[in-house]
Image 1 (cartoon, helix red, strand yellow):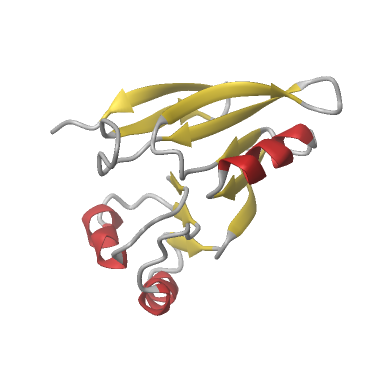
Image 2: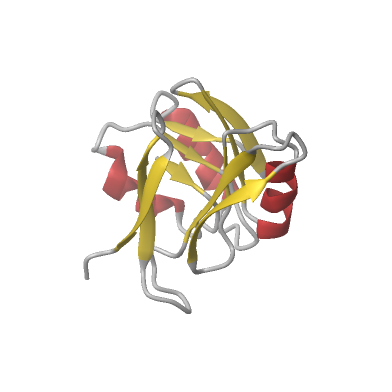
Length: 140
């Protein structure tokens, strides 16, 4: 699970910690309680990986960059150094391929807002092996 920021209440992670999935997350411009988030991540270090402002990680042999801001994500996608660049902040779901400086395309994804802030609640579900992703509505 990749989270692209604005986790205002880290206590909401209690709802997903039981799924036993690794969660990789960064903070956004609405940071909430960063002290508790850091502490909670340390307590659940095998499942919750908190990186701060941005993150580079490798999952399923894919190079992934996480950042909250779309302008920063688009710039990182342009480098061609990543297979997938994910961002938040736009509050609308986006899946696009950005032509990079290496003449290839980098996948950029904004999952939207699971809370339904300024847009219908969405998330993105996909496969890192095939890099196929789809926008899904959050069931109400």
